[in-house]
Image (cartoon, rainbow, N blue to C red; front, top):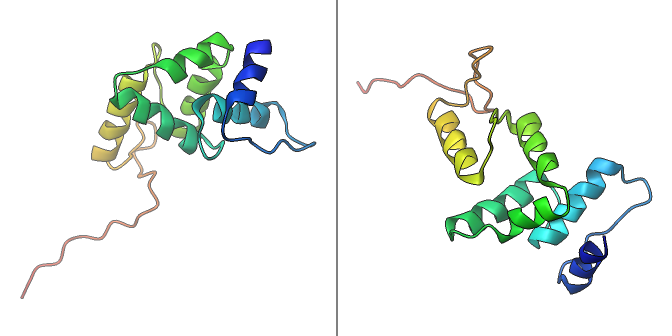
Amino acid sequence: MIQFMMSILESMRWPSFALGDDAKVLRAKMFQVLVKSSGHTFTDIIRELIAENTANKHVKLDEFATYGLEQFLWDGLAKIYGYPATSPTIDDFVLWMFSRAIEDFVTSSTCSPRSHRQRTPPTKSP
């Protein structure tokens, strides 16, 4: 815990902690500090992890494991995005996300589009 507090002190970005924050929000804000992101949403966190991963680095993800937060990350990705990995990695998540996009985010259980865009059939030119 002392290491985590030191990382907060060394961080340039300070999340605002509120009295009513539950355990999930506090963990997300801990993620924010560890990855030095602008926010604590999963989108903010994943963006930082993917950016680091593209540079073939894993320091931020390794810090999650150091502080016992790695499983919370993978559980969040499963719950929020539906990422179903048994041995999750950032590389695998990116490939999985691209495969979902290619399939227009169709879920395997319902076979209905999960995206919010409306699909319109192409029109033929006269």
